[in-house]
Amino acid sequence: MKIDFNDVVPIYIQIADAIEDDILSGRLEEGGNCYSQIQIAKEVNINPATAAKGIRLLVERGVLKKVRGQAMTISENAAAMIKERKLEQMLSEMLENIIRESKKLGISEEELIERIRQMYQDVTVHG
Amino acid sequence: MEGIAIQMDAVRKEYRKNIALDGITVNLHENCIIGLIGANGSGKTTLMKICAGLEEKSSGEVLVCGADITKDISASEEVIYSMHDLPVGKSYRISEILKFYDITYPHFDLVFCKKMLELFGISLKKTCRTLSQGQKSLVHFSCAAAARCRVTLLDEPFIGIDIEKRKMVYEILLRDFMEHPRAIIISSHNLSEIEGILSEMLLLHRGKMVFYQDMDTVREMLFRADGSKEEVMGFVEGKETVCTREKEIGCYAVLKGSVSGKTAQEAKAAGLSVSAVSPEDASVYLTMPEEGKELESLWEN
Image (cartoon, rainbow over all chains, first blue to last red; front, side, top):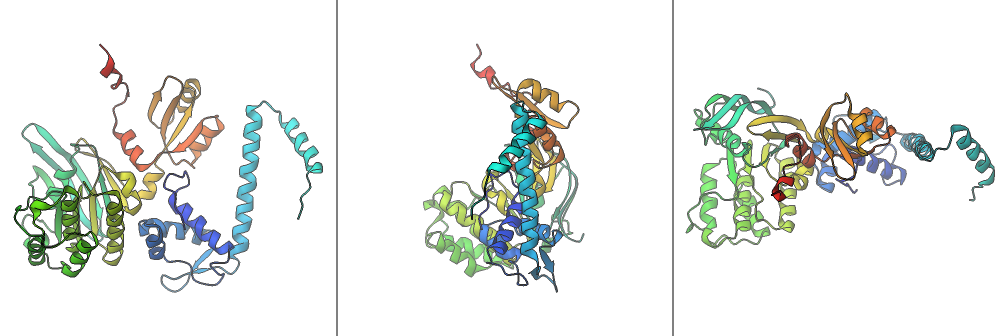
């Protein structure tokens, strides 16, 4: 787990992202236990309050579930939920970037859509 | 009061003509590592010393662990004030200093203290005279941490310590805090180094409190927007702006709100480049004079 204090992404979100990555890679298993706030705090030398905030964010997203006392469990469909959210986020970020840059270059909405339509035919995905 | 380590109400401290603390009202939480941040002369040491009962306030109320520390002797065992250069007799051996702490503080963990000093490579047989500034800081830090007081006040504890050991000290402080939760209040000019281990911070400016907030809130308190003068000035109109700076080539404004918040999104949409403001920079922006031109006058005839 690596935290970058100079990143624009708030630290607790970086922690949530790191946990999600470990769920996607299989290091953390669905139905199994998540890292505790103390484990995370020791691992990356941050205050446990910030670690707890990252965990809370994943509880809100439904990725983690609180069962009995303090133990946090990874939801059964966590990986699918994470993939769906990431896809949605990535797509809107990429589109936003394209639109912003196009506006800077004075490309009209119709022109941009037309370019995407043309390119959509040409681009093939291998593998 | 439940969950409160230090309760301050309208605390004021005046020295002859100087106002060191100008009406501080705040409840500092228990079981937190709190950064006490502010420029030189902003009142950090005075605030700590009043909390420790080492200095008298001019007016106002201070309760430490619910008790008046100047009257309740049992409360004073629960509070420790330490700094990088405590006045200790130069001929004392470190082992004798440890003995003093052991007698004074009921929760003092002598074994833990010795282990820390061994880790720092400081022999207990040394006398205070022979210690470098960094070693002095390490001795005082080790003793204050091992005292495990419910309220631990560390005033510039890391002065002179090399970077490798500073990192060790931060980690020890955080780990020991998790093992033995208590209120640890640290004043430092090196906020960027310690911000990770802090739970909360209190910013002082000329004897007044600017804010007392948890670190995650502070990290999203301000953001910066860069652009041309017209773009920046047009954008900040009617918004909560902390400061604007016109440089020779570009211009920027520091605004209230998270770097991922609504105002920052609007700034991006307006073509400005948006970046986060670290807690250290936020402290500077929130306490600096309105115009940043005073440096220019240095080279004027």
